[in-house]
Length: 169
Image (tube, rainbow, N blue to C red; front, side):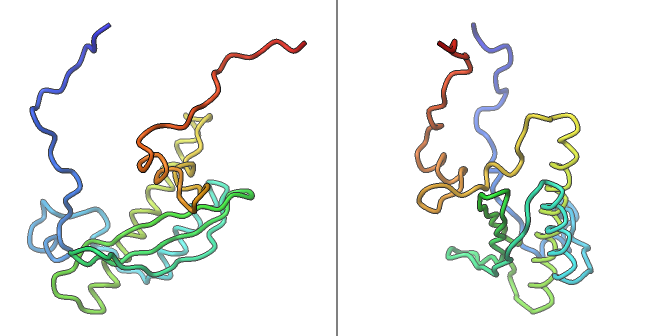
């Protein structure tokens, strides 16, 4: 059986490109939601913690990070516990051309704001997706890798047992 829909474009656009933080002010088309955040970083960390709680997890740490690649991007490694399983979410703020303490804080606030929105949306989605586990991609398995990292590195999904139930003898 062939697919009914096929891509109507020859090449997919690079969706990974992000604007510099300053570009949002200069060009409204490059604005990322949350650009106008004005609250403190602590306020947005609390929002992320509350959103994780709605998903049954407890935030344990917000570790400041920075990228090893150019352009430099600041962010956080957010660790949490879901039941007895540890997890982590890495987020990155938009890169900054001319860094100031205020721009760095605003860029980090924007990233935390967006993560809190995403996690809140996942909690809301449970109403119509009851069989899902939104934090699954971020849970940590063997080798201190998240589920997402393991799938990307291996290039395959893990072998899962079939859904067939075996008769009990």
